[in-house]
Length: 321
Image 1 (cartoon, rainbow, N blue to C red):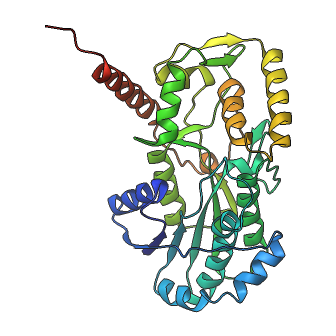
Image 2: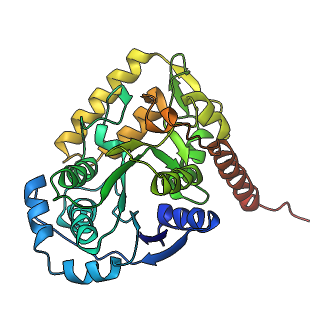
C-alpha cells in the first residue's frame, strides 16, 4: 500500500507522515497547490474543480498511490471570508477528489474540522452541519463539495477536534491561559471536551487509511476522555468555577459584538466557550469497530505548562551579587 500525503510539512501533516512511516507504510509527501476561489456553493466548487487547470498535473502526481491523505488547508479560525480560505479548505479537496478518480486512487482521506458542527451540544458523524464562522463555513463547504463530486475513490472525511501538540501556538496559549486568573469553567466543571493530541489524530488517520473494509463518508476523531476542568489542570492551572448563566450571558454579548465586527471575534469566543462548556461527542465508527487511540493529550498539556514555567524562570531578574 503506497500513500501520498498533501501538506506533510504542516502541524497535522508532519505527524501523519511520521505515524505512517512508523507503521511501515510506503509514503510520499506532496506539496499542495495554492488555490483561490470565488465559488460559495458546493456545486460551483465541484464544477470549478472539474475544469481546473491544475487537474492534469495533480492527476499525474497522484498516479500510483493507493491512499491519498489531504492534511493541507488554512487553519485560520479568526479569518474573515476570503478566496484563499475557500480555495484551501473547499476547492482543494474537491480538486483532489477529481484527480484521485482519474488516477485510480483507492481511498482519499480528507482532514476536516469538528468546527463544521459549530455549537451543537454533541458532535457526531452525520452530515448535519452548523458552521458559525468564515473558517468553519469554508471547511463545511469542502465537505459538501466532496459529497457532490463524481464517483471515484472511497472518500473519507476525518473531522479533527481541538488538536493540541508540542510547541503549537494554540497549546502554548492554552498553558498561559490555564495559569492566569482567567482560567475558569462553567459549573460544575465536569463537562466533556474534545481536546485531543496531534499524535492520537495521526494514529487515527493511519488506522482509517489502512482499514481493510468500507469506511463511512464521515468519521469523528475519537475522544481522549478529557473534561473542561482536567484540561486546565493538566495545563498547569487551577480553574475557578463560574455560574453557567453568567457564562451564557457573556458569550451572547460577545457574539453579538463580534457579528457587528464581521465575526472577527467568533474564533476567540468559541475557544472561551469550549473552555467553559466543552462539547460532548457521540460514540462513532471508531468505537464500534474497536479502534482505540492512546490518551496522550494530558502529557502534551503538562509539557506545555512545564515549558511556560521554565520560560518564566529564565526571565526572572538576577539578584545583585
